[in-house]
Amino acid sequence: MDASAKAVLRPALAGAGVLVASTLVWFVGPLIAIGGSVPLAGEPARWIAIAVLVALAAARAAWRSASAKRRNRRLMDGLVAGEAAAAAATPATAPGAKEVALIAKRFEQAVGVLRRSRIGGKKRSWLAALSGRPYVDELPWYIIIGAPGAGKTTALVNSGLEFPLATTVGEKVIRGVGGTRHCDWWFASDAVLIDTAGRYTTHDSDRAADRAAWLGFLALLARYRPRRPINGVLLTLSVSDLLSASPARRVAHAGELRERIEELHARLGIAFPVYVLVTKTDLLAGFMEFFADFDKDERAQVWGVTFPYETGASGEGPLPRLASDFAALEKRLNDCLIDQLDSER
Image 1 (cartoon, rainbow, N blue to C red):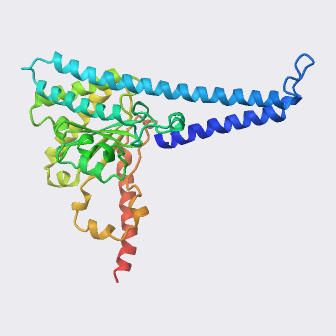
Image 2: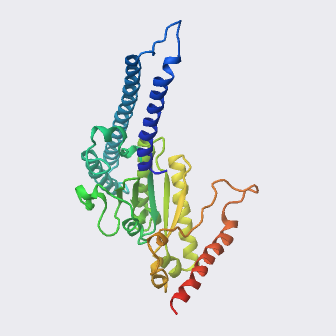
Image 3: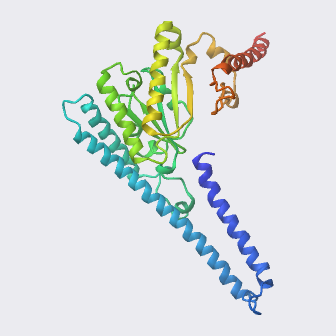
């Protein structure tokens, strides 16, 4: 369930609970006797009891909202302070020193936007404060990794997600222009997505500097979001890279991706799902023509498989299933092909 749905469901359930409790007070209250007296026999007493229930529910909602606001402020202050401290503690001659300073500046700009705004674009009314959109620390956070030019940023642009802050402060504050140089923070209505530079994955620009910036960023997340630094990783693979690379290069790149995932596990100390996204499939011959007639709902369908988190009884991972699952995906396309050919007659 996404954050926006939870934000709507939570107050709805709370309101339903108050309604049920009030109904019980009104109809069952007169039937309850305590020491020979019936305290809720009269209507005024029942109205007072119901008012107390409503006041308690409102107070609890206000407390939750205030607590979330304090957590959000502490998170933002801590992240900025942590980046500044890391930049100050990094010697100017150390590998990645300039990179750390640039990330700190970038993050401080994003935090400044969050301090002036709310996810949703406007300041909360008193009602929205009780049941409105979540604060940033309540949203799931996802890291996006992949090689340079793998289409990470383009996938976000065309994801269909809502980025409400972009309408109030401009997209350049939320993300970079062109290729991602460091880390771009996308604040969507339902999640925070951290678009990392491709060289953080491959370490092919300046290995020492890229590695220092990458590991420093992971340390920052682990320190200031200790309960759940991230909720998942989106790993991008470009079709063009897969087709043009030699077998040896594909194996080497798979090793790089595996190393980044292992570093995430080790540095953050948590388990998380990994979503593999194959990008630039529109470059395949016939792709655009094949899917041109699909409507919005058909295009929104997922073409992929989900592997279980737990390993099988034999201790094997998901690889033994890959061949059969991939064959099933291929069959889905072949089944559509018959209809496509029929419509072109």
